[in-house]
Length: 320
Length: 320
Image 1 (cartoon, rainbow over the protein chains, first blue to last red):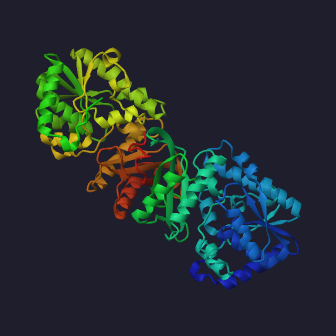
Image 2 (image 1 turned 180 degrees about the vertical axis):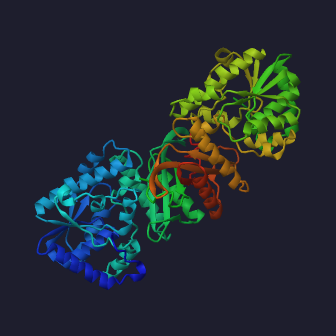
Image 3 (image 1 turned 180 degrees about the horizontal axis):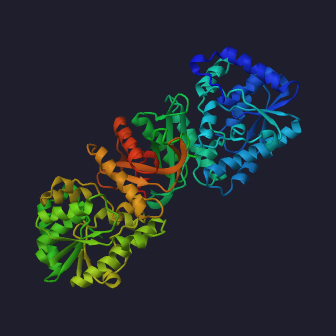
């Protein structure tokens, strides 16, 4: 049973000191490795690990082909500017090969998990000589996985899977006692810019979680374009999470006066404190209309744009 | 080439007199038959035909299993109250059998067309001895069909199909020179209640046009439930068309704390004058939220509700 530290009981400085000490104690004089996605969770873990281990922490950014436009380069540059070396690994072909033809969301997550841990990361770990993986699992991930709502990409032990046996290394999870609001406060205390500690959550399976049905490089390119428009047009809208989803269903539309059985983009924007529950964000009509008009004009083949009105539950934040 | 009568040039009383005379001339002392769907187009045609032919017009309401809740009974009762006899034909099994397993929207429309004209209506015509079918085709139907945007269910001659040869009878279309706004004005002049002349358009393929993917009685029941909620909750919203669409895509949700790979309902509400172009209706946030909450609570298996933001074009009004 994990002891939760609620946002009211969280002392960020003490938490940082405790976790830095705990990482140092667990890893000893060994080498640890971690994957940085650019999200607030993995960013915090990277800096905690760097404080504890210095250059005995090897941090990789895995370019899986599923990230947003410009994201890999921006994340690596931010950390390099903070004095934390991050290596970018191009694994796009491996991920798309693993995802080919898969429709079921759980199988999609599983393919990404296996490619990430077993193939790409396993190889890096073997080459690095690391015995430990630092990982940004938070309490909400564990709640949802234990409840069977969603298979998270990073919760082996809670599922009774021994990561040492299954994947060849131990996993250290410094954030399992806190939730997203706590992680943000710790990130601020660590000196990250607001663009990191207020950054919207972005799922482990990245844009693959934003494509209903089989994932291809072409579909990822479409949802990446829509995601960029959502983030630009809703930049001034305060929300917990803003996302674009490419549907698999085709709907009748028309282009240049001819019938076009085209694509649909769904936009979701969530108000939430800790991701456990959520409400759709109220957005002004002119903003919604401009957003829709841009997606229809700029994302090839899209003939329909919708905005989600559902609460969580019964919805989840992501569609996959 | 059909000569359009624009709304500004339409004299409803003169139009009614002209069309009643034309129907009488074409049908002579024969018998005509027509199908009443309850929409404003077929309602107007029924009354024009009744004025021209009296009891030599046989009007049928085909219960195809695809109508809204209570609709068949309400329509028959309204006309009986106006002194126009309408016979209700239960053809539900025939339509669902014809639709089984069909995913493509055009094939769906074709299956409904064939079942309607060739099977059910053809049988009624043979039994009735009628040589003529009165039908509510309007100018917009012809524009869209000729442009290849959508295959309407009632535009044979424009497509070069001879209905006498293909189906065994001649088709009379009194409304081909006007559009929806004109039909509404004629309906009002004919003495219909506002519930008829301001009634939202409802497509020929009915709720089958509101189900993405294969149509089953179960899916029709779900979208019928959502449609009822949309019509209730948006009763005070002025719009050209309000509809609910059941998507085929499944999305992740949760019910009673467990993962549920559930259904999505899309709501569309259109501002339009004549159906050629359209904009999404601006609806207040509390109304949208209550609408969504009711659909999530009352339509079994639905975990996601969206509202369409797209314009026509590139969208069309219906999804199918």
